[in-house]
Image 1 (cartoon, rainbow, N blue to C red):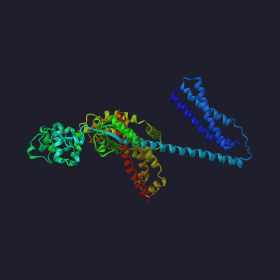
Image 2 (cartoon, rainbow, N blue to C red):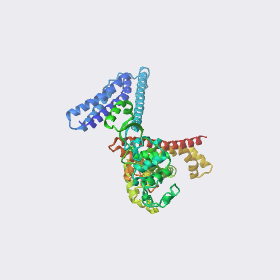
Image 3 (cartoon, one colour):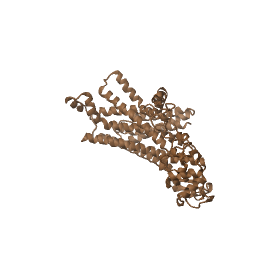
Image 4 (cartoon, one colour):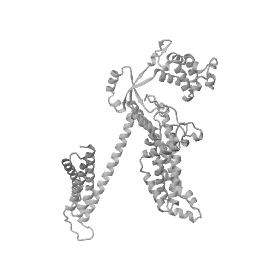
Length: 556
């Protein structure tokens, strides 16, 4: 038997039992019975009737799951109808309004119904809080925990003049660190370190910088005079290591050696709950499965995670900087387009538009668009912004070199269309709430309609408009489907540098990481969710502060 049909039949049974418990007490009180008896009758009739109807349908038509649901519905409704119609009426109605015992029974029935409703509301709040707490705990449980770290080279086993140092990095001098780089890293990799760590040059500039002389490539930085004319791609290991040491402080030099030479790799991870409650078992398992690894506490949310580039191969070294920048650029473009257009449309519909058929059609369409699934807006953005307006959204019309319209601008405009109906509807409600007396007073002092709107209606409605905008932006910030359709990348090594740049966003990489088989990427996804929530709460906080200031200004 279909599990979905069983679940639907069970839900219908509970719903009809609830309906019976809310309606039958008042009916029983009017017919001269106790409200509590009515509660018991309604609850049992709705529940038992639905169950018996479902059982009968399953017995008669075992291969038709849909009839199981229909039987449950019809059985419950039939049982309730039988109770309502067949319950004998033993009340005396000598007066047009209930009084005495009849009045007491009616009041008891209303109080009982209110108690049931209050209990349901309280239960809904408790369920919502439990669901929220479960969500937050799940995220925190994945964002922190134990990891087994394995090194390519143990820190005290780094070779110096052919022999292990036997000392940790912080006990070595800068000259010894320079020698370790020269003796443990290949020449080509050291030259790459210069481009990455010393020059911080974009990868697209490496072909021009590699053959350049040291004096030109490292202009404004420290370098020996005897290397001034030497091309970067001809430096020896010792020369490259010396340049790195001359242009990096000790902490950065130690970090470079630790990450690129010692190269710690996470080979296993355990969530926070397991790390706290099953530590002995984890120690035993790590010793058996990873004898060379070291157990460490790890927070997946770190400075390197926030500032690092994306790495699709290793969750322990990946970062979310390109995704953070991409998300902020996309949502800023969406707000910059949707907010003025939405508020302007709301002002026109409320203050200028006449009540005719055309404007009623527009209003109906706006209300319908607010409920359209986000993936439909993604298809619209793909057709209009990515393809039809490609010369504009790619920046080719302005001299940009982007190959197609899958850019930050296309994504921002698509999300702007997504939230535009919500902003219009909320702004209309805020403008509609402005008292007409305020408008009439302004007109009485000789102000024009536009002056009245600009100086009185709009400031009075702005707190409500900002409330709707906060809700709209919260929805857009976490959307994934539209960004996938307009071509957001799930792996991007460079930061978006403008509206015509290719992009990625936090929802995209969260979606991508949760589909990968490695458990460590799920931990990184949980950390990215925390970053997304913090960014969203920060943006909402600024909007709420602005709204409260406007509200206080109106009051004063």
